[in-house]
Image 1: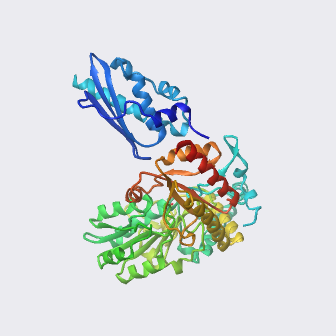
Image 2: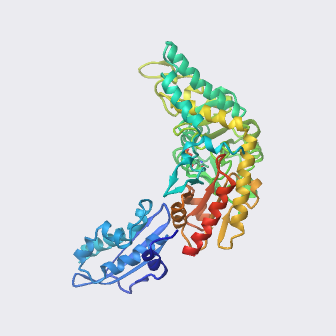
Image 3: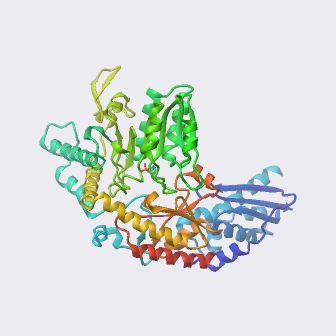
Length: 122
Length: 404
Ligand SMILES: Cc1ncc(COP(=O)(O)O)c(C=O)c1O
């Protein structure tokens, strides 16, 4: 009885956790149902995600997903990052039970929101 | 509890993720015994028609079944049948109460007392009534021990208090509120007292006259009955003064193009075709529980709650919310695991076939007060066993090992 190793790993040792001093784009997404909150901050240069940080509070699945997502899109062109599909993140997490999809996808919603806000600024 | 009781609940034979189902979420909704499932099916097969309007034999039979359910519910709570209003559930019953009392009893500058431990179903309707009528909503505090702060209540009761509404048994803390004492204090200032009995009527003997509230709401689906049926009990004299919430067919005497006169309660509050088969199913659920005896239902619930409480309190990684004394509780325990989100606990237990609740249980203000965003909850009914409590506690240790 446990989660996939990859979820436990990212939950216990989150990557890219924290804040950027001068983010080019940022967004917060929350799920008031369970209190999960994720903030994504981006440093964008030449239409590419140079830096990414997340901060969050919530369940293991949402936090592990946020951590893994930062690795998934770091260094990617903005346009490519904006096209990361739900299924891609879910399979990178090793699969997520259907009752917890909202938790797993919360960080991706935050990323898309941040990218959308960033592109309107530039 | 007779060990064969469990066998009467067909769904409990199934497995989840390949494991026997251990269902510990009866506070959300209870499972149904064959007696209830069959009563509803039999009604559809043998006696079904619309109620109160047909002059043919079948319609009379259906009406007898529907009214028979009303009589059964009345006898369960020490009421008269004409004081039982069928609704869709607790939520609709409380909306009816809040709307009708708002229309007749609450005006600008008046006050409505609620508590910090209310389910959203007994908070939002009063927020709306207060807003609509220009009244103030005053929340009575909950103590750190998870009880109502009686001093705070006394400070807030005043001649401006037109309604005092409170939960009988909290669906999060499990606390059994002393409704008779509180109702007596509220009546002294002339307030109408409303009790949300969604977690008490299904689990313990409740006599509405002893309870002392003027209006009492509960749901069929939490007491082994069907969904879509619930009850608002009201003092006859009060019900007679209240206007209907839903208007249309079956609740009127005379109708002109520009006006109508209302029927007497309870029909006045049951506009439209009611959930007839669901009422019949609820009647069967009441018969079923009365055959066991509400004292025995309560004793069994307390036994399992005491075991769960003991087990949870003895685990250093667990924080229990609400009273420590099982006698001061309904058949449920909410708790948190240090540093672990309730959804993770619930998901991992689910892998073992153990269904518990993780979330805010429709009580966000209470969780805010407890300083947490969500909690875990186990709750019981007649079909749960001592073994299941043991399985749950063992599995919780494994969750803690995996995530702690
Ligand atoms: C204390 C309390 N009040 C009200 C409700 C709402 O009941 P229903 O959803 O059946 O209307 C519930 C059930 O969730 C409850 O536990």
